[in-house]
Image (cartoon, rainbow, N blue to C red; front, side, top):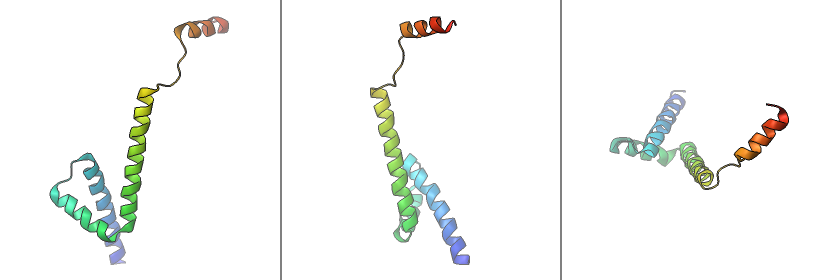
Length: 87
C-alpha cells in the first residue's frame, strides 16, 4: 500500500512538473525529476503525449479560426431579419 501511495504521489507531482515544463517554467532540477519519473512510468508518458497532442490541436484550431472566421451575417441581412421579426 505504501508503494502505491508513493507512486500516485509521484505521478501527481510528475503531472505538475510536466505542465510547468510545457509552460517553460520548470527548473533544471524539476526537468531531471520528471525525466527520471518518466523512465519507469508509462502512464505519465502517455498523459504527457496526450496533453501535447491536445495542445497542438488547440493551437491548430486557433490558427484555423484566425484564418477562417466563423460565418457572420452582414449588417444588411441582420436588419432585414429584424424588420421581418418586428424588432
